[in-house]
Image (cartoon, rainbow, N blue to C red; front, side):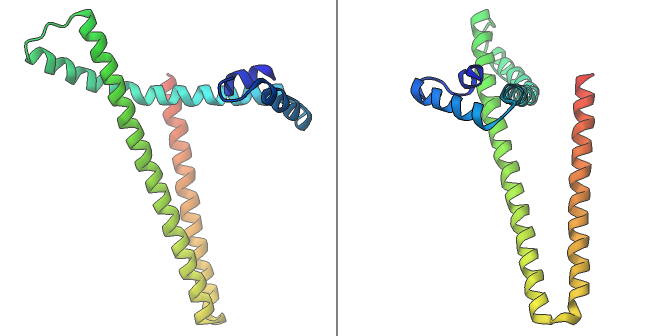
Length: 168
């Protein structure tokens, strides 16, 4: 249990007394804390590996562009310059990845908003049109949910295929 708190909570953030109380709470609340902690750590490491895999091609592209710019300016690529270019490429790759992640989050939020708006509209139509329209409205809502579930399942399968492909 102490390993969990060492991994997730630094002493700068949580004092030792607070850490001890967290340890006692977790151990009394959950029966198999160690397994849960190992699972959380494994998921965190898996997430970090996914991020690293996503950063690698971005960083390589930026690094090659920076090297090309440096050589076109007449600079000689020394070990120190290459190290600085790698650092700069890594920093820019992180910024680009975060921007992409924000864009994906924005797209997910907009999709949820559209879905909620469609549900509100459907509810409004049910109440305004009366019982004779309900079967059609229910059919449309079920069709919408089915399409959404199908697209989520397809994305899940594509992610699994991509992970299997990248592991090879």
